[in-house]
Length: 558
Image (cartoon, rainbow, N blue to C red):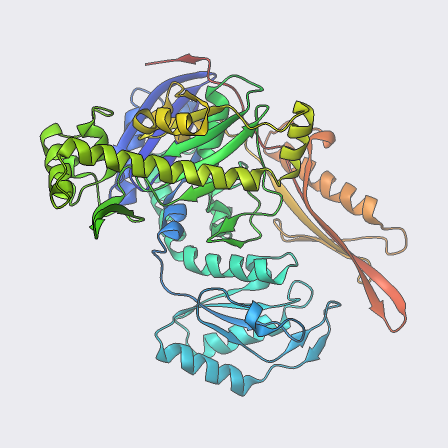
């Protein structure tokens, strides 16, 4: 048996899966104490189940997604060491940024030393402005991290209580702007993610559950809970990935469909082409900036059933934040869920309170509760539809989408919108109509994220760096180092070695994987030059076991 748990900003969902059958589901409000929410959800789906029969638990979460969407994290400053080249005006990362002297060239050699007096002055400036979280990023730090390490050491000497993240850890691949954004997000999310992971551990310990525990990543793969704490940014789109896998499992194979997951805090949008989730070729985009996070081509927008509604002049607007549940469910302010309740598009909450919320909201505009609710629903539908249209422009630039279009032999867009999440029933038919598509709401739609987590195929990855000049290779995940033959080692052998190590790791986990199934998620070859000669090569490969779902849901349980 497998368990999927999705910890969202509004609800925590859980599903117990026995082969292709959903045996139990739970949907409870997410409390301020996440531990309490997870325990309650587990207790519902594991009632009358012997914990020894559990093989795997996969957790997805929109906690980090919502935190980023609402910018609800401590402020983060950046200390950047870009060296010569681009004008500093291009380094606008929408946060406090100080450029430091110093430079490492593309070969990993220091060409300009750090200025430690300048670093100390920068720290004094940050301290005066109340910053306690700092990202330190050098342009070629993956090839020589000495500058980042020295700046971090000075910060720790001066301010031992500050949190410091280094770019070569947070984003180990080249591409300076993406590494900066990835480091910034790692700094912003590490503490809340650690609290989340601790809540999961405590919940499992309290219920004496010893099954393997994985976290769903943004690309639909998984990683062990303990490892996920090292790279919290990998989970930024865990929730959207879960809803995408959930729809993949709940709809017919080979179908092409737009996925719209309407939650309380956010709406997540994704695309499935011929039965397979579309991957983003460039990495996760957060607040219009690209990161180094491998992800499905998803977007999370801050509008949901519990978005705050208010008047702005003579217009009703929604704000991208959640103050609590809907007014009709004893919340503090009117929300789209109240509007859906007034129009009979949901059965959640109290009808009288929903009418009261809409009546108060529309009174200044001379509108009845029903008229106000109608206008609110139109605003939300227009907003989500516009976001889907924007995503089409991005999806059309993805290589896999272009191939799909070529196979259609004409320019065409998907014609099915699959709605899941708590707000799907009330909004998806109208969203689909505006897009000219057919609406589909599959079984288990309210808990589709938990279904997606439960069916997620466990994945493992291996990152290999081989240095022919030094004559060794290093496996980052295992902390293992071995020797190589400097003369005969080449790119083919590096990739073969990475695959071999991954197959060994998979066998240890009992995963049946063939070499042909292994996915190469990153590769780079770099020549090292000494004087006028090539003195060696650096090979960087990251390989991963295949992502996907273990089964389709073909029958239900309780």
